[in-house]
Length: 53
Image (tube, helix red, strand yellow):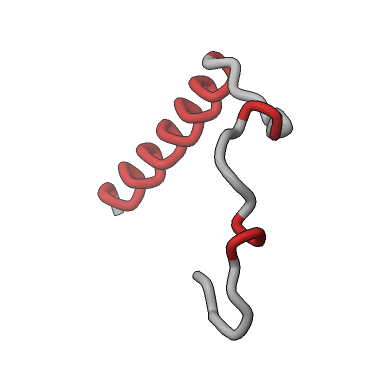
């Protein structure tokens, strides 16, 4: 029973620490700026009848 309580305490501590760190690092979703991505479109070179992964 002590091990179960210790495991639950560890899970709670890890969850709280994760939430705190995610709030602190300033991470936020941002839309992709397609003008900054180089290269070509995959569909321009795709061949008919081939399965691309």
